Length: 483
Length: 98
Image 1 (cartoon, each protein chain N blue to C red):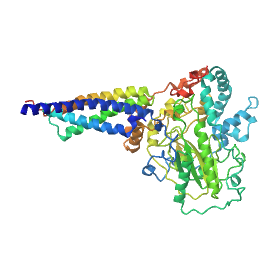
Image 2 (tube, rainbow over the protein chains, first blue to last red):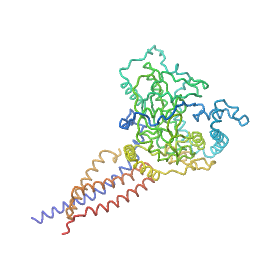
Image 3 (tube, chains in turn red, brown):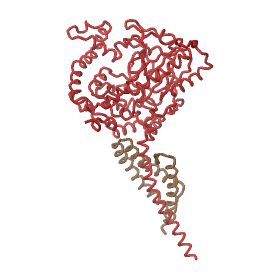
C-alpha cells in the first residue's frame, strides 16, 4: 500500500516537473510570438485610425512647466518671412535672380538680406545652377521607380480648402448665412469648459493631438510675401482678435515616413491637418467668434513650432521640429488663431532638451549638414538649435522623392511606433533625472537602428544611390506592379 | 484575431508561469535545494530578463528591424545566459548533499 502511494506521488511530481519544463519552453516561445505580433500590430501606427482623442495618451500634467523650454534670453524680433522663411525667399530668388543683373535686379529687402547673409545667396545660386539641372537629368532616368509614391503623394494632396485671400479683419469673422442665422457670439459659461469642448471637437474632426496656447505676438510674422490679405511691403500688425492659438495635427503615414527621403511625403498629414483646421475654424465662426486657420505647407502668418511648445504639445528639438511624446517628430500641425475665450494648456518638459543635447542622431544622418552639432543659440531672442534651412532645402531638391526630405523625422529615437519597447523607452527617459538611461538608449539606438551612409541618399548625379532610410512598404514598390 | 497580443494569450502565459513555478519547486525539493523567498525573487527577475530578451527580438523582427533583433538578441541574450549561469550557482547554495 505504502509502495503504491509513493509510486503514485512520484508520478505526479514527475508530471508536474515535466509540465514546468514544458511550460517554460512554451511560455518563452509565446513571448517571442507575442513580440512578433506586437511589432506588426497595426495599432502601433498611432494616430491614423484611432480618432476621438484616444491617441493623446501622454500624461502632460505630470510634465507641465510654467515657462516654455525655448527660453527667452534677449530682446525679441519677429520673423521677416519674405527672407527668413526659406520657401518664400527661394521663390523670390527663382523669380528675380538673373546673373546679368545680380543682386541689383532684386527687391530691396532681398538685396539687403543677401548682403548680410552671402552664404545663403551662394546656396540659393547653387540650387538653381547645379542641383536643378542634375535633378532634371536624373528624373528622366530614375523617376519611374517612384511612380507609385508620387501618385500616392499627389492623391493625398488633391483635396484642399480654398486659400485665404482676405485680411484677418474680413476673413476671420463670421458672415451671415444665407438662411439668416445670427453672427452674434454665443456666451460661454467658462473658458475651461470651452477648451474641453474645442479639444473634443478637434479630436472628433480627426486631430490626433490638440493643444491650446495664448498667442505670443513674437511668433507672428513681421512681413509676409504670400498674401492672405497682407501686403508684402507693410509690416503685419498683430490683429487684436488673435488672442488664442489652437493646435491641431496628424502624423504622416508611418511606413512611407520610414522610407524617406525617396518614398515619403508630407502631403498626407498636411492635407488632413489642413482640413481639420478649416473645420475647427468653421465651428468657431458658427458660434460667432473669429477664427483663422494657418495651415501647411506654406499658408501661415506665423511660426508654428513655438506655438506647439507653448501649447504643451511637445518640445522643440535639434532639427527645430517639435518632438511630441506620442508621435515623436512625426506630427504635422496646423494652427487656428481665435478670439474665443479659452483656457491655455501649460508647456511641458519631458527631457527632450537634455536628450537632444547629446543624441545628435539627426545631425549625423542629415545628408546636407543642415542640422547643427553645436549647442542652442539665441535666435531672435529665444534659445534654440538653429537649422540651416537653405542647405536643408537644397537636399530636398537633390532627391527624387515626392516632396523633399524627412530623414530627421525618420531617424529620431522619439519617432517610433507605439509598441511596448518604444513606449517603455519614452517612459524611462522622461522619468530618469540622472540622464544615464538617455545616454544608454541613444547608444543602442545608433547601433540597433542604423541607416545608409548619408551620401547615399542623394541622386546618382550628385554622388548618391537614391537610398532610403528603410525599404518602402509593399504598396509603394513600383517595380512589383508596373512593367 | 491576433491571439498573441490578446488578453487570452496573457491568461495562458499566466497558467504556464504557474506550472513552471510549481515544476521548479518540486524539482528543487527533490534535489534537496532550499528555496527561500530571496531566491524566488532572483529567479523572477531573471525570468523577466529572459522574457524581455525573447520579446525584444520578436518585436524588432515584427516591426521590420532585423539589425535591432540581431544586436538586441546578442546583447540581452548574452546577459541572460551569463546571469542565468550565475543565478543557477546561487540557487544551488545550501544544497543538502546527503
